Length: 420
Ligand code: FES
Ligand SMILES: [Fe+2]
Image 1: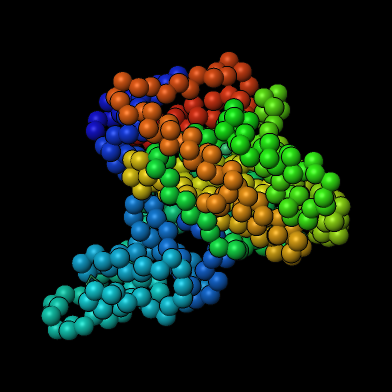
Image 2: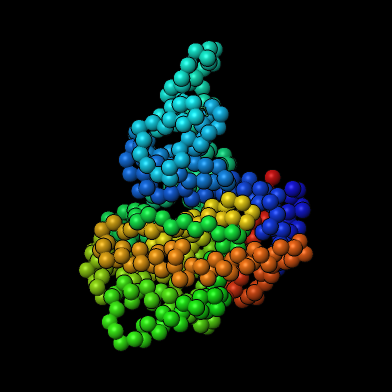
């Protein structure tokens, strides 16, 4: 598909339906956006010891993130260089070597070929040749333990790419008294029958919660009004659900910041749960380690979500990382991981888990309402004569009731799609 015809599908004020429904556009997006950007792979804590691995994917290429014998982290293509078989089917685990299940070629954890059966069949061929190793993406880098990879050899370095959004990661890491963060508690996976961009376009959408989540807001409020005592975690979960009942005025007061490369960030309407009285000792410890002023700022900075366009969104205050994995033009896998602040109280981590269960679990009373709305957008865009309107708030400051963040995403989309 030509660059010109792709660019004509996205205007400053509206987007053509084919951008969400045409498999040719989707293929071009994988190659021009996902295969060029820095995409999030995982957190270093997910591969704790030599031989630990997790699976990941960028632009439909299956990958592995592996801890090597030297303690370093590598990202490898999860594909056998012999005849192309997926080497590892498990989502995570531990190995001393990778052994292909098809013809038993084996590889060291750094991807180098170790042995092949019947090596005499390769007379005259150098089995040490790099083309017979598991291949590596050209660029892999980490920011404070969060690992990204780029399938492109050229482009901005990771720190430049993350400009504006790094503070969200700084905030998370520094809220741990030890400066360590880890992924804990497993992962929720939801496969949604819609284009990946429909999910991203809901990222800071303060126009929908009071409408879409209405079926859960009222019941939550009703339970909260009852005189019966509730456990602290139940009370927390109900407050999270009821918080979707914010007014338009509140949403209009929440700034949404726009950054290069399509990244965006929305302020939170929920305060950091660590400000509750029960966490006073943790806050005192943080003040001792970071200094009173920095510790106070870390607690008061409230971010609902920070989008690392196009592949991930971190909810810094609530300690959730969501990974966006486009699988087909109308199918997107969302992975939601919880982060634990090492050295912070276990009861604070319980809140993180409760929030994940409340809003990111497939059985959450909140999630399915969002998914229903996304799928309706996909269904409504069936014809090629349809357009999506993204003009709201174009003369105003960027807030949660403006579509400025969507326009920012499409500026990046056009830049990637029209790059040579
Ligand atoms: S495809 Fe892996 S050994 Fe043949
Ligand atoms: Fe929602």
